[in-house]
Image (cartoon, rainbow, N blue to C red; front, side):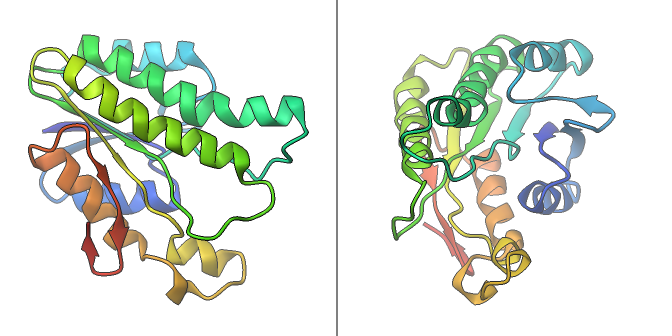
Length: 198
C-alpha cells in the first residue's frame, strides 16, 4: 500500500513509519518535511492530496494538545483547532481522494488520572472518538476510519523525566496503527498497552 504518515518525525510517527516501511511505501509528512502538512492549517491538508496521489491510507500522528487552563479562552480554543478540527478535516478530504477501500487512522488519547489543564484534551479526545464512530457509516467507497488512543508513551515519559515503565513503548503503539490499517475494523478506537492492543 501507499500510506501517508502525518507527523512522521515525532515519537509515535517515527515508530509507525519504521514498522510500516517493512511492507509498504510510506510517504512522510510533517510541518517541516518534504511533504508539508500542518494540522492547524486546513489549506495544507487540502494541498497534501494534490501533492501526493494514489494513496491507500492516511495516518495522523501529528496532532497534540498542550495542557490549557479552563478559563483561558484563546488557548482553550487553539487546543481544539489542530487535534480535533484538523483531524476531522483530514477525514473529510481523505474521503474524496483515497483509493477505494482505503483507510484513515487518527490519534486521540486517554489518561486514567485527571490533571490540571487537561479539560481541553478530554474534550478533543472524546470528540474525536465520537466522530470516528459516527463518521464510519458515512464513509464512501468502502473507506474505513478508526483511531488509536495511545495514552502515555514510554519514550515521552522518559523525555519529561518520569518513569517510562508507566507508559506504552512507541513500538507497541505503532502496532495498533498497523492493525487499524491492515485489518477490517471500522469506527473503532484502538487502545494499545505494553505488549498488546485492546
